[in-house]
Image 1 (cartoon, rainbow, N blue to C red):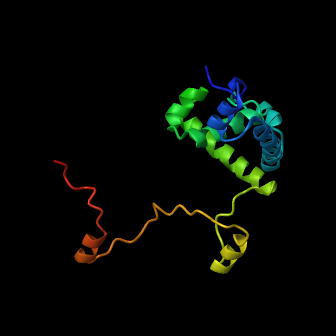
Image 2: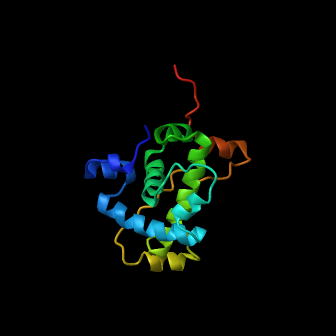
Image 3: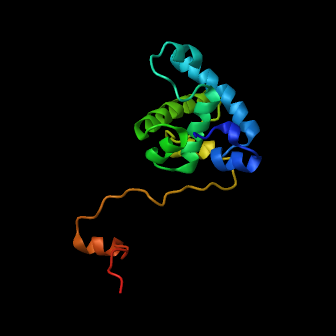
Length: 163
């Protein structure tokens, strides 16, 4: 039996499964519906009625819940599909669609996080009102030095055999 947002019983489960409260989810669902209709030019129901295949997600809320759950849970597409009554490929395709619509909804509502800046000056201007900011840069790629001695200086030692 596929899981549905209607199965959620309390705020703790809302936060655990979507990262949002029920109220936040319902507010976002309105923006999500607008973004979906703007993206496709028709409502979800009209689009489904013109389709020859049965849709897994009948409402905007169902697709939004699936999308948020997939981000929050971090499970593989096969497991995600199992949980929602899909195969892995369809889980991936529905997540990609949901993410495109979610991004458009967040942008339209002015809530899309800023990820790039034209210059250091623009970055500083954007964050000038904040006392502290945290930047996760733990997994930044870097070019491996070609010189053997330089490589040794950067080697973490994690691949050494254990006794």
